[in-house]
Length: 58
Image 1: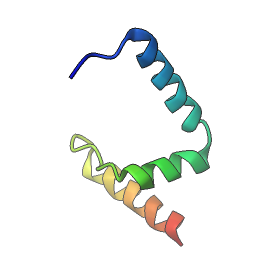
Image 2 (image 1 turned 90 degrees about the vertical axis):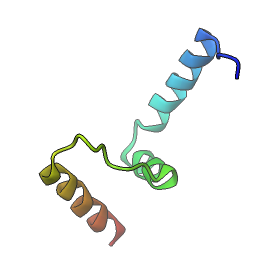
Image 3 (image 1 turned 180 degrees about the vertical axis):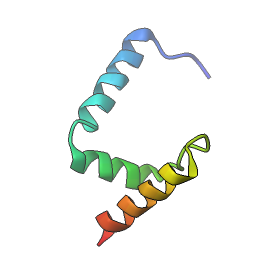
C-alpha cells in the first residue's frame, strides 16, 4: 500500500479537526466509528464515559 503524501495527510488532519469542532459532530463521529475506549484509561474514567454515553442516548 503506497504511503500518502504530507499534503494529503495535512488535508485529512484538517478535515478531521473541522469535523470534531462541534459537540454534535464529535458525538456523531464517535457513534459512526464505534471506537473502543482506550485500554490504558482508568476504570473510573471509563465508567464516567459510559455514563455520559447513556445520558446522551436518552
